[in-house]
Length: 210
Image (cartoon, rainbow, N blue to C red; front, side, top):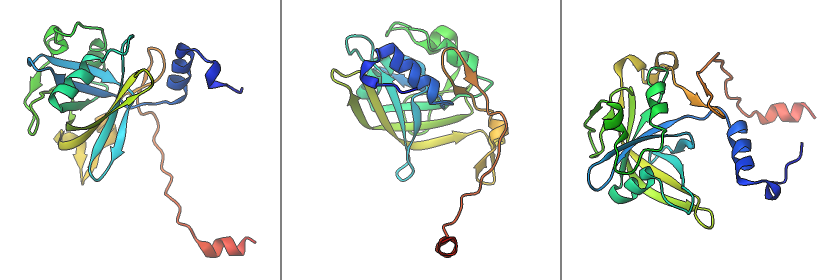
């Protein structure tokens, strides 16, 4: 199968990307506007951007007419947000927050989600998540002409991890039980885990093989 991207419609590109690039981690982002209305929304275009400084990236697609979604607009206004990680215990609540709530309606209040204060930012974190990344806005990169997506890069300034997930400086993946996004309405859990030690380049082995 050979696919010429220039011949695809937007929806076909979308289906191709979300079907091929799986599984995708989910950022359950809390933010608030300048009036203090707290927004919660999930985004699966999310990943690590840098280790030092510690940064994460979240891409937020715009609405038709190049209109920013509430999350991107809030982060641009306040310069802060929290990524609440998604697991098997909170995924149903995460899915509920994906509905198109009006900008002046807080998903947190509408769904009765419990929040607690963050340590380094004003945006609250969600109690049903057991890992939180408190972030300050580093940069927003506008993608497309006209702009169709806001790529948000945030610097992680504080992390909360539940005690039962953290052992010897590492996160226990089984205890964490993260959930990832697939295509359509599908999600996935970790499944079977396996190791592949990273090889060490040995120039002598290369010369012997010739």
